[in-house]
Length: 170
Image (cartoon, rainbow, N blue to C red):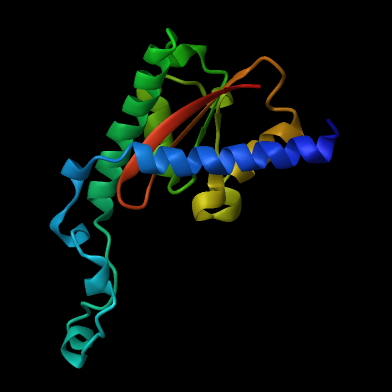
C-alpha cells in the first residue's frame, strides 16, 4: 500500500473513531438544564427581549467543564486500559483533545504520565475543535515522536459532554 493511501486510510479511521467516541461515551445524567433544548427550540427566532438580556448568546460554565474533563478523561483512559489488561503506565504517548492546556496538564497528572509521554500543541494552534487529535497525531508521526510498536492513547471530551478514549498500537 503506498504511503498516501495509507495516510488517507488512517485519517478516515481516526475521524470515524472520534465520531464513535463522542457518540458512544455520552452520559445524559451529566447534562445541565441549559443543554436540554430541543432542536425545534433552536430554530425559534430570537426576539428583542432575548437580545437585551443576552439570552441569544451561547454560554459555557467553564468551571463545570473543567471539573468534568479532569475527572472523566482520566477515568475513560483507566477504564479502557483495564479492559485491555493494561495500565496508564503502559501508554507510550497520550494525545488528548487540545481544548485547554490546564485540562490536559490535570489529566496528565491524574494518570501519572511524564511530560515526554504527553503531546500538546494547543499553544501553537489554539483549539481546532474536531481536528485537534488528528493534527496532533500527524505532527507526532512526522516528527518521529511515535515509533512502530508504541501504544498511543487518544482521549477527548467534547460537545454535549461526550467523552471517550481509544488505544492504537502504531
